[in-house]
Image: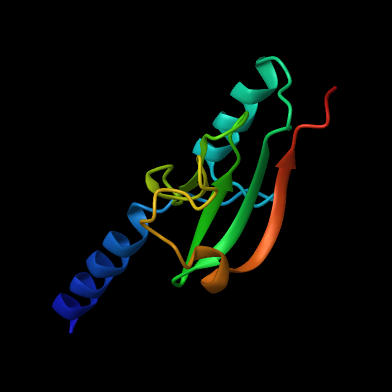
Length: 116
């Protein structure tokens, strides 16, 4: 029985070890670091925004680009790029997650640059 308990603990640890902890504002530490970096940069027009969503059973982050015809980026909890769901010349991203906005739920604004 002890052997099975140890195996169960290892399996549970492996499932959670790669996921970042989400803070009280809904961001992981790497997303928070990106936001802090953006705050040190000059304000952009349109302003950067960071939204969290639930997508395919996971929390993801959609971060807008600084200007025209650039892809907006979708990140996972560990700040790995998943895809570019929108933006670019066509406004439809890179095509690798074309149904993101139809499938994503629970949109939450994490941060918007309110500087002028």
